[in-house]
Image (tube, rainbow, N blue to C red; front, side):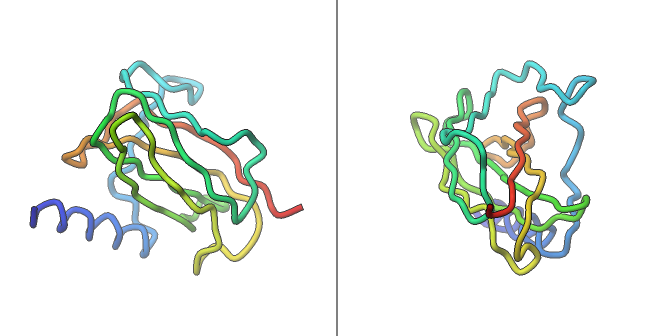
Length: 133
């Protein structure tokens, strides 16, 4: 249990400081998800608007974790971990504001992790958040 808390603390610290040491390219050429057996889908329909809450439906990762993060001009402005519940739901994830993200759009990615916080490659889901109209 201490190990999981320590890892979560490191990941949160990395999020706060903008360090993203665990990020690896989990995609085939062209940014398309590969075949990890885990899929992540956003329950709500686009467009995704700054300040909105979203929920994710995750197949193949019960008991695991989802890290949802957003970037503006390449800088990390938001990161949140939520556990995947039995049945595959994860969320809600609130798309701003944060101390680093007070307004505007962002490019976001949801990443899957096992229950032991090991990154599941080729499971990423990309989406865009637009500013409040």
